[in-house]
Length: 197
Length: 197
Image (cartoon, rainbow over all chains, first blue to last red; front, side):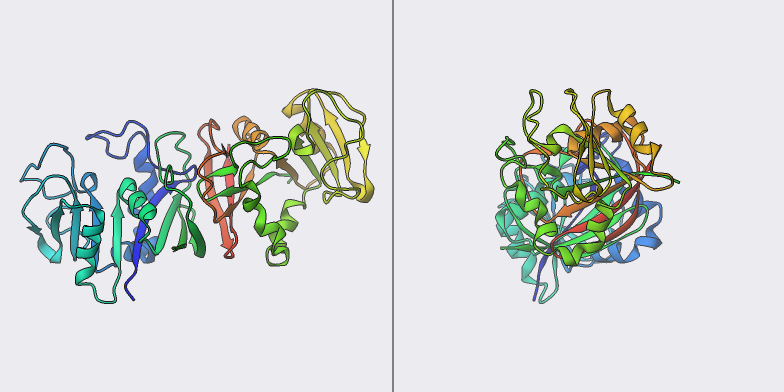
């Protein structure tokens, strides 16, 4: 059966980004330290990275797709170059309509202006029994966690104390969570949780 | 070589206790959910529990030993009955002097009024190559983490979203942490971190 998964990298003290997030520093102060496990030694964490980009469709927040709040710069095609790693439909939550954007390698960005439920319905339409991935940012994961549809939360805990920034779980409400798998290296601890409904 | 270890159970969202901690509710609102892994299925987590009470000497905060802030009720002998599970010297950090208290099974509570460094020196005196354990509470673990002497932090992450309460890492400052072991069951995830100096 198709499931909804969400992946987030957090610091040991629970932050998904440092303080002072801005257009120039989307991850905030020191936030790039969170993602060393993906960029410094990707081969060591290949299974986790594969799982992140494994779903048959994705949903992401407007800020994860690109900078700017007031409408779209039509030249902006995301952070990932000509061939984004998703190779699947990606639904971008936004208040500003924009034409769909087909990239090389099968990634298509579709801009959804009518809320998280509609985006999830649309994402589910063509995945069959494969998964839908909530790609981030943290605010979007939080919204879906609170609303209920997430079946599996995969946390990648980086061995970093941020001290300040944006927390994943703030205001998310009570959740039934059950750990189903743990593993790790010296750069990251991988936790997989089943979310109850 | 003798090392300093610290054990703490925290919620998935990083709390060591719920909100509204009081004498009657030392773990705050819902805090008892954190410790289900120790009490509901101890046999399943025997190795972790053994490691917690394994050190040759312990240090704990005044509130972990017992309630009350203004001096001592000399009848109070800790939460653990006549035979506490430590079976070793336990140094209790306090502002109020009190005579040492010898319990059954080898636990002796000694009340230390001259600060965390002195307590650690004293605890180290008779352990040889065995470990000193920082038994808690969170404020005491935080003080020792900030001051530097902790070699190993063992976190027991309960699959619970508390939403509010006391956080372990608030204000602890930057730490060099390296995960060295992960394991778990459906009631708890065990993480062992080496702390750099």
